[in-house]
Image (cartoon, rainbow, N blue to C red; front, side):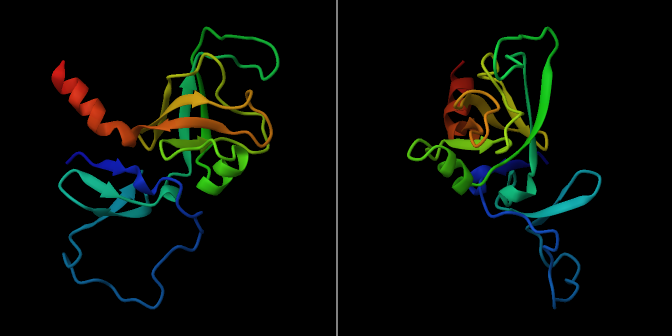
Length: 172
């Protein structure tokens, strides 16, 4: 079954290393048919099956996403590589994103990156993918400068455009 992540919860609360059931008991076999294990060779988070193709989970289950492109590799100056560059960057909370760009962030945007600066997407990377656990979650969009302290990258939230994407594909 093809599981797609519903990213309505993107930007949810931060993860804690001790997220677990405390004081519970082992569930009876097959008593919770709607729960799924998000798994990458090991269980790292749970999710809820909401229909035969969709799972809802918490954004903090996706701690880092892969950004890739052939854009500028310098925060000051210009250097466009011949070889594809890759960066794993953390998803930031909605609060962190809004603090970096007050009044500029919409529900169609997410922020990823390092608030300390030094790593980011840049000019020439626009339009490229943001992939979290093998799922396209974002498109490189904009930011203030590149790799600047307190100014993470801003990315278009792909899940908000799923209907448009599907209808465009179907029409062509």
